[in-house]
Amino acid sequence: QVQLVESGGGSVQAGGSLRLTCTASGRTFGYSTFLMAWFRQVQGNEREAVATIDSEGSTTYASSVTGRFTISKDNAKNDLYLQMNSLKPEDTAMYYCAADSRSLLGDRGMRPQDRKRYNYWGQGTQVTVSS
Image (cartoon, rainbow, N blue to C red):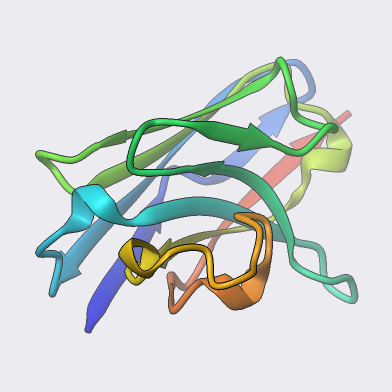
């Protein structure tokens, strides 16, 4: 099992910045090969992919955050980050870290943005942006 713990959420005014961190523990052997992602969810809505990063460092971003958010990872620390700048009230959500530890098996017909691809999830950290 892999445990994912998010931190760094909080309340900020529009235009501000936050940096989220997700630390992996447990069976993290091969962490560098994991596909990692940040998702977010507003109550009553589906969980949506915000950003993903694969083992080669290739990234994807939701169109709503492109140019404002940056995903990165530190394989030596088993850490995943999301730097969020120029925050907007519509960024308010619970943010979740997710890991696909089976990515060496290929994409299994799923895109990095597909929730079903991920077999480990964190408990989430709340981000609230006020206008």
